[in-house]
Image 1 (cartoon, rainbow, N blue to C red):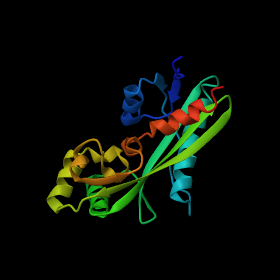
Image 2 (cartoon, one colour):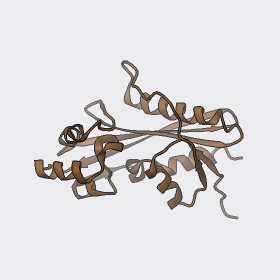
Image 3 (cartoon, rainbow, N blue to C red):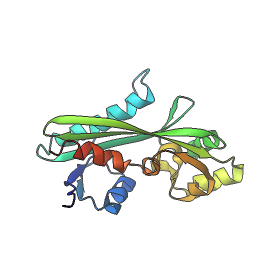
Image 4 (cartoon, helix red, strand yellow):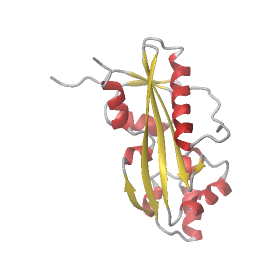
Length: 190
C-alpha cells in the first residue's frame, strides 16, 4: 500500500514553500494569511516563529474549516538576534556582513490546523557562511534577490557560492522543513 499525501491549504505566499511542496508531489492550494508579523517585546526567536506559524494557519483555517491548513514562518538568528527580511539593499548588505564568516541559525515554525486543532513544531538548522569580501557581499545583495528572504539570502541560489556548512535540515534553510510537515500531518491521519 502506498502513502497518500492529503491535500493542504498553504497559508503562505512564499514561492519557495510552493516549490518544495511541488517537488515532493504534495497537492495544495495557496491562501496568504494577513497577520501582523511584528515581534513582541522580549519574545524569544523560537516563540516568535512558532507564534507566527500558528497565527497564519489559524487565520486561513477560519475560512477553510474542513481543510488541513499549513502555516510556516522562517527567520534567521545570529547572536540571539532575529534577522528578518531586509527593508532595502543597504539593509541586505548589513545582514550579509553580519553573517559573513559566521555560523547562524535558521528557525522555522510549522503549524498544522486540522478539525479545529493546531499542532506545531520547530525546526532549527545551523548554517556557516565563508568570510566574504565587500565585493562578494555586494554581488550577493545585488544579484541574490534578497528583499523577500529572511537573512537576505537564498541557500539554493547565489548564496550557495559562500555556504561552508549546514548542520540539520537543508529544506528548512530553503524555506520549509518538509519532513517535519509530513510528520505533523501523518502522525494524526489515523
